[in-house]
Length: 187
Image (cartoon, rainbow, N blue to C red; front, side, top):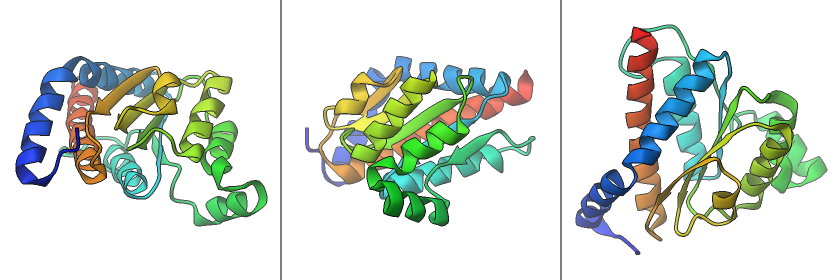
């Protein structure tokens, strides 16, 4: 399970492409459905996964490969005043859940990135989304952790190597963005 090195990444990428094709298609369809219905994609994660959340939200709002109208996407990782106030007043476990409670509605979609699926603030975000009737997509690694059982659609990179998991999450999100961008442009 613990993939390493460039060769390990290529083998892992091939395995994920073969084993997760249905999940990738389902995620792209859910993103498109959410955006067409006027909902927003809300992305969250910690560390490198936070960077991925910000990166992917930007691809939807600004553009990925083609010029087109902006698509509704928000990274819950970017407002430092909100994050630090919530962490100080309510605890770091609540930094995403509080935003989910304040900002999301059932026609939105929460997209979580976590290499373990065990980060308390990511678990709490999923629980808050469930309580509000907001669907959840989760990009996970290792065994999927607690988040696996809370999400509506799950994509698990079968590795224990955090870097490989994050690299594939970002690559897969780019593929999904390309699919969504193409479908939103045509339809």
